[in-house]
Image (cartoon, rainbow, N blue to C red; front, side, top):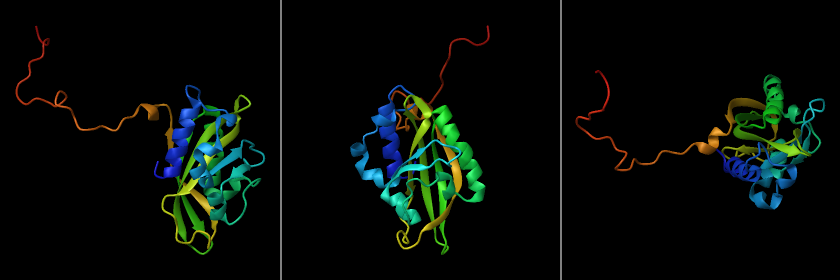
Length: 192
């Protein structure tokens, strides 16, 4: 994940879910993530309505120059991306799997910005097809933010953040015991 809001929300979501595939909606305390609320959102799982925004942070709304609450999440995407995102949302909900994606944003004036999208499943009344928690944050804050507004989003690279993410460790310097020895090493076994 490239943006601090994505990393922070994923770490918080991961801690709140514990051993479960996803936390309950009521387990998410806005005060615990107050510094990233502007980049955060919650969408409802409703295919017919285009997965409407239940909540949208001020930074997310500023990107589009309007309040997004009640607006379909699917309406934000260009025609090509809409099909991919339309399949992605149910996958996140059905499989209780976190996904991070690169997103290109373009304004009507021709300006561009790279964003990062994080989608996380939430249980809502015991089912995952209720709500999704997310972040939509610029990788680098665009100079035009607030003066120009995003017309449509284009999906880029996608990564699944499954249980393997928790077990990954960044390799550090090798200890003296783990360093390879130079010279001849004899192993027992082999030809008899």
